[in-house]
Image (cartoon, rainbow, N blue to C red; front, top):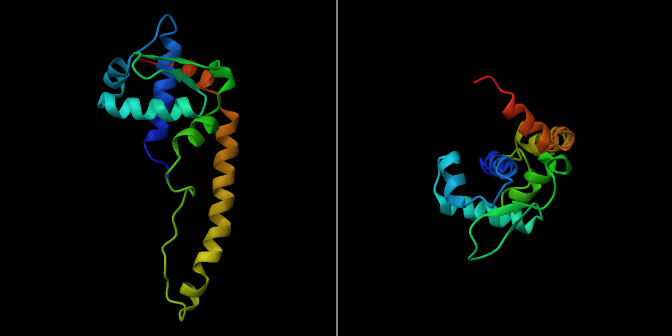
Length: 141
């Protein structure tokens, strides 16, 4: 399942791009996301480990490592879904094997869900954060 971490990570990276003039702090980002700075620092740690941003312990702020046109939504998705269930869709466990549906539901859904996840990942790979930032800057107020 995709958590809100994905959209928060896109939010963070877009803010970093828009504030290129200097390092932007987790407090300022938290104000924009409307969450606690600790949540932002945890997210920034994941983005740092994924090589999307540079941040240093004890030093306020972070900077982008790559330009936004070199970062796709798939890069961000993979960076922040660490430790979260890998599959987009969860299938209930332990269906009744004596039932025709229960016996076959998992294998049938796994195949279809895998195709849906692959399609989603292909679409995310087509969209760069530069496109997202451009859409945000040109959105009607």
